[in-house]
Image (cartoon, rainbow, N blue to C red; front, top):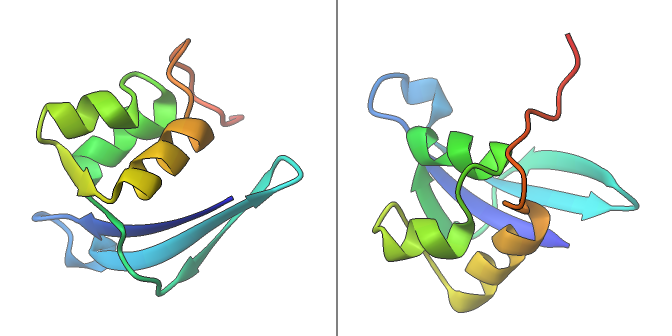
Length: 89
């Protein structure tokens, strides 16, 4: 799957960018660029990434904007059944 993001951050300009998330075989890769089909703030990216809120719910709440396809792809890539932080410390 491929998701084109446009991330906004009003606190740290370095976080404002377009990027492409590609996921294949259970592994993800992020590269700069892309179309920005899904537009969201860094504050919205966090609950999406952790599964706290789904992409369709965030869209209904006005927290993200995107094409129907981009929202569906985000929903598939970031399931919201059980919030989790997929990282190891």
